[in-house]
Image (tube, rainbow, N blue to C red; front, top):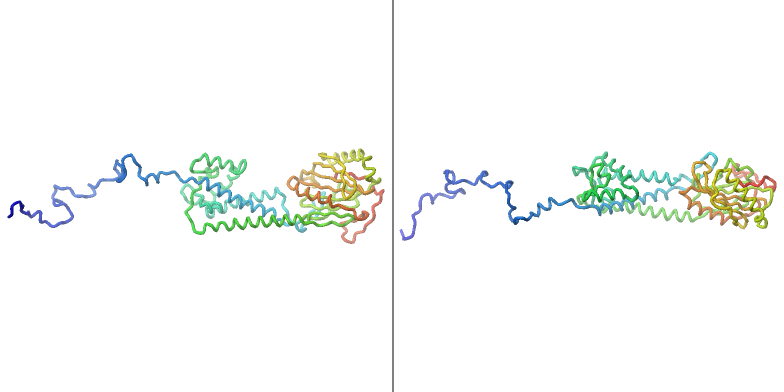
Length: 430
């Protein structure tokens, strides 16, 4: 055996088995599950992380939820634009054709077709708003605005809430809206930190979070574009329609009025005795213009109106008091169709007695004939009625002597020329 060599023992010639040479002999421990260190009991930092540092994955898991305040505001603005378009369609899309007639106590009139007043329109609009949020958030957890911004409504378990929860959340929107423009809801979202919950969310136990990205999310732009284009189109149509006029020609007078207004007979049961004729146009039972002619027993002209003005003012004030109205302005002298006259403004009850209205009364004198133009409106339709009233007064003309025509008798009604002594001067507030 050469120098330095060691003899090989039998143990060293044992085949390799993947275990230590003395495994199973009782003097060398094996690498079993009992001897592998349990990472759950480890107190040091994870591998690759220096002491005092936090593992990146642990930092991500502990991070706060994403702040969706900006997205919620943008989604709310989109929904507000869509709902505003629906309101314009609701109001501007009303028919103005003469289709319906109604007898309203002291007034009988053939109005334009079905037309909502502003109060009824608001009630219907609010119902549409609540239905919009409830239906969409119940069905898919998203409104149009939320879908476009990648948001969704979730419950405490992260799933889409049930219909009853969405109903409660939707009803509390009326509180979140207070006092204006979601101010209460915005303050609540700021106070709830990154959760960004409004009052409805807190009450219903819901939250708005980022939604899982979906394909074709941009398709939500289609209903938004359709509603906004329809609203613009109807607004333009109504604007051009309102600009069109019709001309009334009967009873020896003519005047222009809006083509969209209804036309018919407004019969006032009190104070109407002695009228030679009357007619009316209007958009609602308390928003109308009534034109009538009354015979006088003494002529009033441009030459003597100044002299009789004190007596005329006294009669007007007495008539207004008898009607339990309040004189707001006038009397002041005016001209209508080249005729001398006076104008007053009053505030009181409408013909139907159901609304508080402002009335503008113009009395124009043509010798022994008094032409009375009464423009009456509620606050909701004040601007539209005032424009129409200005149009009637500006275009009023006397074309021939006034005659009596019974409008209820139809086109074959008989007529007669007014007599100067037919009745006493008529200055009724109605």
